[in-house]
Amino acid sequence: MENNEKPTEKKKLALNVVSNKEHKGFGAGTIDLSQVACVIIDRGEAYLDIGAMHAKSKVERGIKFSPNKEDVPNGRPCWVVWVAVDRGEEGSCYAGVTSCEMLVDEEARRGWKVLPDHVNRLDAALKRKIMLDNIGPEEKAALKKLLIEHNAEMWERSSEQLKEALNA
Image 1 (cartoon, rainbow, N blue to C red):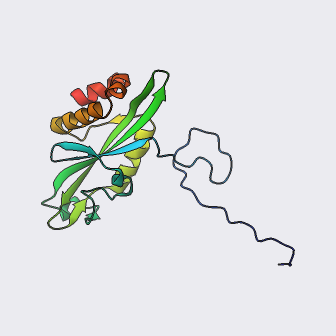
Image 2 (cartoon, rainbow, N blue to C red; image 1 turned 180 degrees about the vertical axis):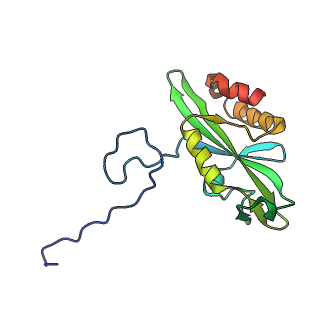
Image 3 (cartoon, rainbow, N blue to C red; image 1 turned 90 degrees about the vertical axis):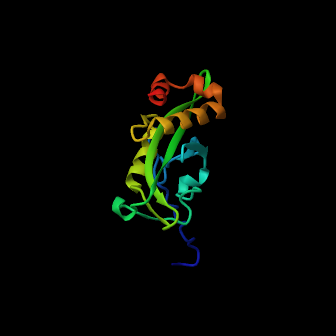
């Protein structure tokens, strides 16, 4: 390299998962998670836990996860719920809501989850889908209660599909 040449600046890598914009070159279309909330449902209680975004929620900390369910025979069921928020003419609403199952055995410090399922369901929430097929009535009631208590106006503006899914 000659003395008058400047070193080329390295382009930073970014994770291209979803985009609703045209591709504009390197790093374009990176995922924006600013409109996603993480909810944990554990022992019939639903609560917000931003740590779930990086697999560091209260229930996940200190747990070694395996993709094999049989590795966690005494695990209790817990769920991560991805809640995507959207803004319409009338205001914000809960737009995409998806749940991901996991098992946690705190005593053995072992857990089970299928990471690709967590990623795919996060993507589905960002795409405004409702996927709550793997939670039962108690978990649905806890999630509905949390969403209403967090912001009743957002709940009112949310889709009938979401309300029906949480009433089932």
